[in-house]
Image (tube, rainbow, N blue to C red):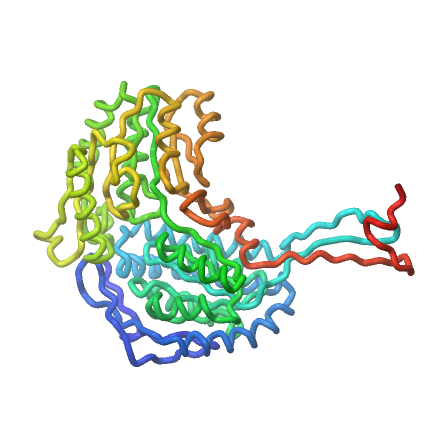
Length: 499
């Protein structure tokens, strides 16, 4: 394992292109070892206001920079991220815990997003359309909103930040970014890249601190006109409510209770691979993680046996070790929540087949580790089949038919990701139509979104907006309709039309 160190022992806010120290700090802990990595600021609301004032001033000039030139900065950012990919990946594993191959994948996602959104600098398409009157031209175009706020979680500390900040930047906005206090290092490293790539001062400002202080100040600041948030449903509902009172645009990406459907004609070996990767990658700490397996009763027993055998081969430990497949939980609070759900599952009558306990001995005694867990004989109504656990816990639910599998999948309050394993082309197309999630996979697990397609879900997962893809531009732009009348006379729409 490679040991990296930061060039600072205490992080600072990044405001108007300057590093601004904050006296009050807290420790960032490596979840694999329990060791302190760095001190992160716990900022007050005043830091948010200082950042907003800088952003307002910088944004006015940035919006006048032609979009293809704004895109050139994103290209430079992408190339710099590519050059530093391994360092970024190892630092990500240190602060987050996910295994190194996943960290590399996450950094690559940020690189891809830089190049993709840079390409939008030569598009940012509006529409031209025929006008209903003679000698009149009609079109629409995207315009920047102004100052936007992004609030990002600890489980994907660089990917989600790039999903939000890069479309905002190329659209001509300025950004106030509050990263999670558990994983601030990616924000620090990315801010340095922004600076070195030549992004003008004030266009991206990073404010570290608690959501209840910094996030709340962002939500209530009159000059921040968009909030893009990824996190818990409770927090998202509160943000939506507060932004609604201010008529402020808000984009929410929240929880999931994602299922893999395994039909009786499925390739079971492939299904097992997909379930393992989806359920235990990032130790189940993904909004797209598979936490339910809806399996046809004809193959339930066989799938159970193969899953148990495959789970026995999972290595658990420090993600910087290339041989490790499952890393730690983010902190003790995460462990405690998982433990509570294990007891809930037992009380509800589910049968525990594997795992269900914290790992505290040997190489695991200094970090936060939980054994990959499998429940069977779970009914669709049980809490462990309905509520997001955010850990390496999977519930097997038996069904008698394809139609019942679809109903069980759709019978939760979330709607982020779903998956079906089948070799029946008719079922494939029906599943694509009938699964009520924002993302559907066929013969693959519930994770693996690509940056050029929209990311987000239905129902309790979000509020209709999407991260990633060109759809992300809708969050950070306003549509403007433009009419040019070159007739030399007043023409009235809908009135002076010949009928």
